[in-house]
Each structure stands twice: as C-alpha cells, then as structure tokens.
Length: 165
Image (cartoon, rainbow, N blue to C red):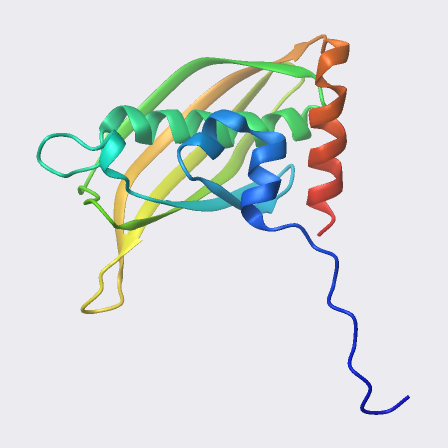
C-alpha cells in the first residue's frame, strides 16, 4: 500500500557486530564498519582509560587495533583457517588525542598459501579543516595455513554473516 510505513531493517549495530566477532576490540569501543577478505574498516574514540598521561592515545593500543583488524581480514581471506601474527611494524606519524575519533582501514597487500601481509592505516579528521590526518601506518604479517579449532566456528559464522551486510 502506497504511503504505508515500512518496517525498519533488522540490522545489528556496529557495536553488536564487534561484540560478537572481536571481544578485545569491542572492550576498547572499536566498531567494525566494512568486513571482507580484502578490506576491513572501523573506528574507535580515544578513551582516557588507554591514554598516556599526556592525553594522547597509547601506541600499544594502535598496534593492538592494527593486529586485530588485520587478523580478522586474514582469517576470512584464508578460508577461515587459524591465523597467527608473526610480525608487526608500525610507524607513528601524528598523535591522536583524548576524544578523537580514530578511523581504521586494513587492506590486504599479499595473499599466499602460508603468508598474508596487511597494511593498516589509522587517521583522525582535523576538526578545523576537515582534512584526514594520518596517525599511524602498519604492516602486519600473518601465518595463515594453520588448522582452525572447532571453537572458532562461531566466529566464522559471524564474520560470514556480517560481511554480507
């Protein structure tokens, strides 16, 4: 019937998706945006609980986020085989401050039978100019030919489900 209200889509929130597929990142307030075997995006807001005393995001948090999103993408790209990070390099370019919204994008740059390499960029938007400010640039290398235990089936199902949204 024309003009009749439509039922809202039954879509989970980004926070609900993150809570289901990645509890450690969810604990930081990270929210997945796009999830696929080629690219992962998301964001988080810098919290006082993981800032340096100077009210800047702790570098270890940036590294933790980089490995987390790269691992999720590698897990999908490997056909849901268990992955293990074997090398993480991160260059810190500019700081993120308490309250900043940090955007994250992980892109797969190498896919082989045993190794994947992902590049992870983290940035914030300058509130005055609206320009993107690159905060860090990471490369994450992962071993990706390991058998996946049955306990991982729930994560596999969740990632498959959310990659279709």
